[in-house]
Image (tube, rainbow, N blue to C red; front, side):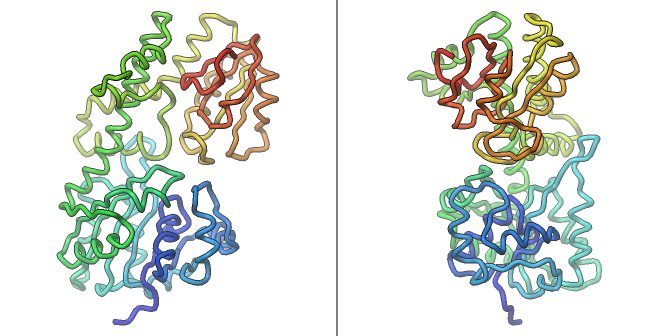
Length: 396
């Protein structure tokens, strides 16, 4: 069967799909990005990235309408040899994974795909989901279907760089799927690691849960240090200086975003909610904003204070505010009567003020995210400062 395009990415305008599509298009693959968000698609067509992704926009401008194309027409899925699924997989209000959305997507796609295509799932999935998708497609006795799982493991904002640098895990539910996916990703990745579907599904979840637990350890150490009126950053520097076995201890700070907590919870749900370390990490990381507020309440009547939060995204130097703990911090502060001001270098919101105005106006300044721009920000000596990352200049 002849295909007019090499790759179609479902969810192609998102944080996972768009950088991947740009990367494949940059090596000459004909890539179609399919997404239902027509407004974002039109912006991308003009050569504009809809979110911060370092090094991406120059490549986008080079490949758009040459090897990279965008569509909201589901019929275009038929035209590609490879279909890569890169939609989000959230948890519900009970902190359980929403499996139905991904299964429903494949039911919706079924009239537009064929067993001649290789389907590659890029989304983070609940273990055994890939097998359920195969069963869903096979119900009408068509096939055999070829489904691979190639989880993404990039740091948001740096996908263009990391797609070239990081090994790619590849698993397949058939030999053809495994070989096809390995051949495709081998053109952009320095190393292909072939594993079973079950190994790949767990590897992705283990990776994010491990990072989330690491951050929880640092945050718990921070809370213990603060209880003794000791600077955790000085303790940490003493621990890691020349001592390789502790080098991986991160600094304290908000651990948030659309992946770490979600994937930790997915792993817990898969293991019958028997993931004590994961649940403990959630308690620590999600409890950090409340701990900071309690520390301040011990010193001040917050109803008489103006509190400024520097940084509203979920990590430094990007524009994504999804699941940012800075907002949770703000809600707790307002509950105790504080007037709360927000500022961010990248996220756009008409209620935000610039960082200079925030530090001038605030009695208490809390760094929510360590944006690089804060390294040179002058803060009044009269202000109370909570800076877990020690990003602000010394002697503020």
